[in-house]
Amino acid sequence: MMKIWPFTRKGVSGFSAASTATQVTEGIDANGLTAVVTGATSGIGVETTRTLTMRGVRVVLAVRNVDAGKNLKAKILEEFPAAKLDVLELDLSSLASVEKFASEYKSLGLPLNVLINNAGIMATPFQLSKDNIELQFATNHLGHFHLTNLLLDAMKKTAHESNREGRIVNVSSEAHRFTYSEGIRFDSINDESRYNRLQAYGQSKLANILHANELARRLKQEGVRITANSLHPGSITTNLLRHHNFINGFIHTLGKLVLKDVSQGAATSCYVALHPQVEGLSGEYFMDSNIAEPTSQAKDVELAMKLWDFSLKFRQA
Image (cartoon, rainbow, N blue to C red; front, side, top):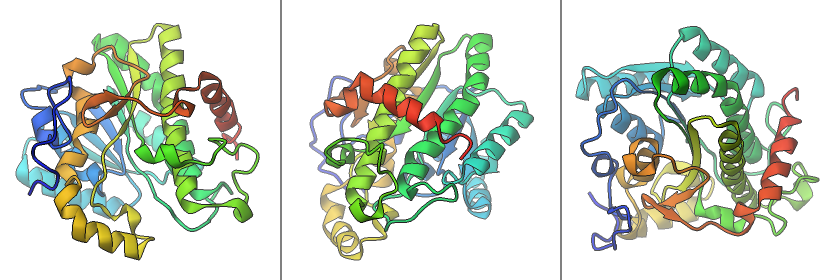
């Protein structure tokens, strides 16, 4: 059932907030492509994975819960018996797990055309990761930052050998607008006394955009045929807000009328990952399957460079 007003105006791409993942990938033959999708077993990750496989992509499900991954694989195979799916364990809050995943991926000998950094946690109470980093920043940004770096050589090799553009997609959020006033709290990431769970979420989502932008700049400089973009999936009725019972209940009551369902929520990820209109576009921010405008902080080149250098420091944490 469509959960957003059906008369939403279409953008330049011909799509709108009401467009579904199936609609934005209509007619696209993605056979021969291989993608990694993090957080593939919950929320929009499920529909993103399903849509990519429907279009012929071999998808590696990078998931915390391997049993849930295997269950999703079985479910998709029931619908699409020719689907090509692999399941590998990945806990983005642990840099050791990220390194283990990258090593296991490389050992499979698979190419890598598309990386969708989709997994995320939202507005959690203050907690440190296994590497002693604030959990939202660790999971939403640092885990994906290191995962991307570790898989980049495989993507470069694939892009060169296949002569097809590689695409890196960071699932951010309009919540990047509600980060701390300084954007990224480099000097107090782990300061519990100043922690605000919603602003910390915004900080991690700002980091997703800055990461994609700086990566795009570096890839362009290298002359590599790989793009990096970020996006806002839309306000979706998923379980991300499970730590806020009142808000969650409110959303599920009224949200059915005005918010996106999961198929609409996954649309922009699938659009940016597969659509020919996105060919050659890099360092852009998308919303409702159209280019959108993030905050001035999100476009701050120096802030993006500073975040890159800051993030590298945690490699051996």
